[in-house]
Image (tube, rainbow, N blue to C red; front, top):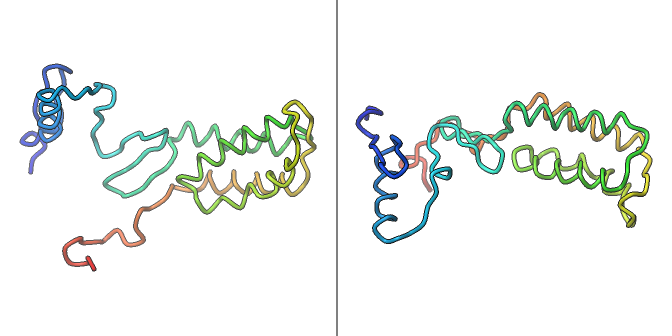
Length: 164
């Protein structure tokens, strides 16, 4: 099917969109279901909660700028001698978010969690030991080289022939 045949104009948003999406929006309009233009995304690569989801390649990854920022933050944190407890929590939170597309890197935070366990004062200084440095550097190296997560091991999958 040609792309030109499968798109339609949606007047309220003054946009050309996939025909099926326009049909759905018109149905929602008919029933009074609210929707927003900024949420009507379409294409091969979609930004979803900060990740790039590629429907054609069946992958999820970080956009290059966010990936570079995370790698830089991990390296800068690892290069420090000490950080405040709340900074440990921030780098752990950011890393945890990235585990949605880099799930095999979860062990990289084990020493971070061990280092902050039982500490309560968010402004307290916490020394960064070699184990934390090594783990964060390991994570940064892998994130830098990773192309993301594949949804299926075998991309040559045919739902009708390969279904159980």
